[in-house]
Length: 301
Image (tube, rainbow, N blue to C red; front, side, top):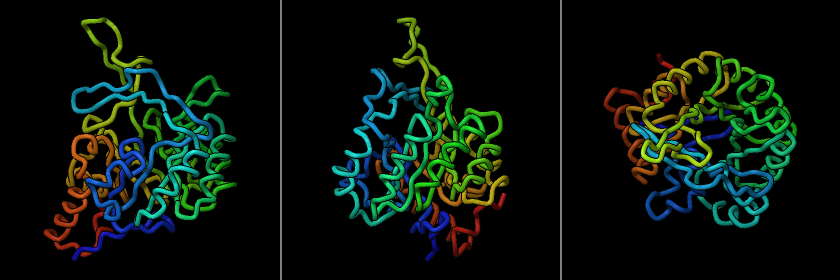
């Protein structure tokens, strides 16, 4: 049998296949379809300090080889998560990770501190693609200083594995990754969605309520693989790759580019069992190629 175990700093995963935030709910929504314990890690939907209503509808649009979304981090806030959701998911026998968002370093840190107190949550993933209200809406993750400020604030109050999710809408993503590493990030995950737009030509207006949204799906994969390769060669901390993974071959590409683990997002909407298929496909490929441990292919390119 091939050994699929991987480590993200101190976080041990039974296999490298994770779910991407915003595409798998809290895991409970898929429990009748997928054996949740068999997934390497489940990253739950974005959580903020205060409740958020999200953007107006329509906030999703299908595009060629992908989809756009502008959901806007709709959630009921971290207190609701701690009181209502956590008791229902803490018994899931895999790594359940909370995606944390905010609009200032202070709100990121306050939200992370509340999650830190939850015994069965071993890690958080910081979404630094959020708008910085003090900088007129510019995302924290598009500058080294913005990313570093958030990671530094969170690292002071959060004591478990800290993963930072990087925005691809930057000039040099490797520089952003280095800035996060320097402030204490244990890992970086990439890529978040690429900014895009679609227009309804019959009604002569954008298909999304706020005009633009995040592009995900197979269309972004070549960009994501290149950025994972860039970052894996720039930092010493583990890299988690995501962006358009639809099958085991896609996942293996990311791992060969340097990803220790991968996340599956949009594909969950197409096939709820995709995580299991990718996990089994990776194991089969490794066995067919004489590999005994998944680490044998990480960063070989």
